[in-house]
Length: 507
Image (tube, rainbow, N blue to C red):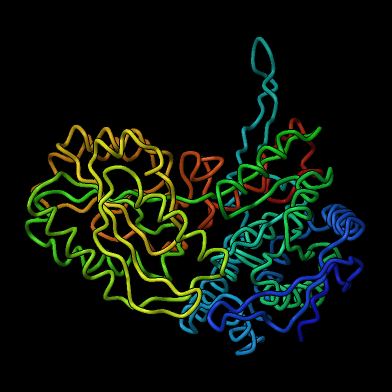
């Protein structure tokens, strides 16, 4: 079923001479499939097909695009257990996670199909003209949103379904009327190929133009760089590291025609715990956060990597309890040996900084690529003076910052880089004193969670999954929820047009 070839429009292609394999981190061995990296000729062909398809696909009715999206969902479900097995082989993630993420992916596709059944999502404005207005006639203006053109989507390492081949970027771009070229993630190229075949099958069944979708393999950065630089590509969706996202952003800005790169580049997601909350339920909070820190081996972009509070006996007790509970949770396989090594390297850097105190570190014997939790604490003063402590440690890790007072805590928040989420754990009696804290967090994050954990992102019209740089490259947009469609369109106005020439939804 998996042959390792690129899918360019409706055609399989393997013209390149570079090959690679994916890796099973749980079994600690290479998978059996060999993949062919896309050549420059194949990249150009995919871009040319996408550009040609855009002319047709951007004009296809919302009803037909919705049918296409629903058909993709059906085709993915039709892949059955085989898809789940390949996902697990390439990610090391458990079956329950695979099934849950597939469900979220199906849900996203159906959500966008439902969204575009009417044209309300375009937020169109009809500003009727007044030819009799003095001293000058008023023109008739009708504004709407139109698709940008071919989109390149980069698959994410930590979400082989929901943020990859048929994930939120692809679904929202299809919904907006944009063809998509996926740069498949090398860690789960087999999963990507199976999903790609489902998309192509759906495109054929629903009579979409060839080139509405292509999937290109790559083991390194060259294919992605060429796609972002290609003059026929009009925007980019990326979920991954700050280094990778920033490189693509800079590359897109240097083009003769600069294009937007909507990149989500990681976050340490600060959590603030009040003194009253620690007094009343410190142990329960520690237990919940131990689970959140280690969920999915800590490989979520909303992992609570930073916990803030004012130093006290209750805070000390909380830190000890958090460490104790976190290392009770069994070690889990990380996505890939490279991610495992990066986690340990970055955690070690933090743990070796001046003032850093290792609270707990999982020490039981584990298999290759498996890791348990690491909890570290540091003072607010040391955190403020050392930017090395601000870095994201992608994995089951959290740094607890114990501030000398509320003023220092606010200073820590104000000095943070942009984040996806912030969380406040508080009691009702704290409410009257939270305004300053809420304001400080609001300036640094895209979403504030109250009395919960940041792990888990609801796919909802009201969701914001983005934030100030470097959480994302443009804090005005979300990568999750129905609002994600806004990334792939631009405002456009018709002035004094005959009704017969207007789109139906503007007549």
